[in-house]
Amino acid sequence: MSADELTIFCMVPTPFQDDGSLDEPALRNHLRRLIAARQGLYLASGGAGEAHVLSPQELRRVYEIGVDESAGRVPVYAGLRESRSAADLIEIAQAAVAARVDVLQMYQLDNGHGMIPNPREQEAYWTELLETIRHPVALSIHYDAKFKAPTPFLQQLCKRYDHIVAFNLVGSSTAYFMELRDAIPDHVRFFCALPDIVQFAALGAAGGINPINNLIPYVVQNIADAYVAGDNARVAEAAKTVQRSLNIVSRWAPSTARWVKMGMKVLGIGNGVLRLPYLLPPESELQSMAQAFEKLGLSDLEAEAKAYAPR
Image (cartoon, rainbow, N blue to C red; front, top):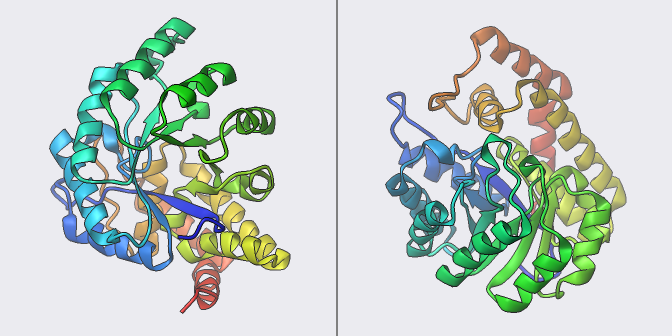
């Protein structure tokens, strides 16, 4: 993907067979669908990817399959799960590096039991990670962490570690985004939540991230392509479809994995199997989602968006 494009990443679910084991053929089929729509891949995230119930061996296999299927056509990021210690994250990061993913996304220290790490603890966490893992890294300052690292601290991290290549600011305020964007060198790319893409692209975002792409990848890609082309009417229509779709699935959120796999099952592109503790809702709720998608005309809107895709 060229530098003047907006890169859209999809938080990819991890397909399982009926017995709960990793479904490699289903993962490959779904990745091919996303790659055809030019979606960047975020593999095995803590949300949509159910990373917390995957073993290190399974995680590495998911990363390997993503790299193999992409073959350099779209970027492949490892969405490393949230961790309560650097040591725990390093084990997963090393598996992703061995699989040759392009970039590792690292979350801030997980604030389990309501803990908010102080500046010295944040310093110790990031120093251990970034000294040990010398591979391109994206730092995620996610709203679910309930705290955000101070801008001067992140600025100093970027000066010390040139393998920081991106920031993912999902749920960020515009003030924090702009403050951080102004403080960090331009070669470090910034990504935002997909619903914010139009505003944040104007402020310097290089792209967006979301799991709704699993259901409507071409609609989502239309936002980026139309924005770059200056086609504001098409941007607006695609953005409306994305937000209306998110409004529908939000009934079953959180967790993200639940609504993603529900949506894929309803649309006939997945079997809906989740690993405990998550469970697929009953058939009546699947029918409710299906009816809402039908009322929106989601399948037709995706087909129309696909027609705009470059040949």
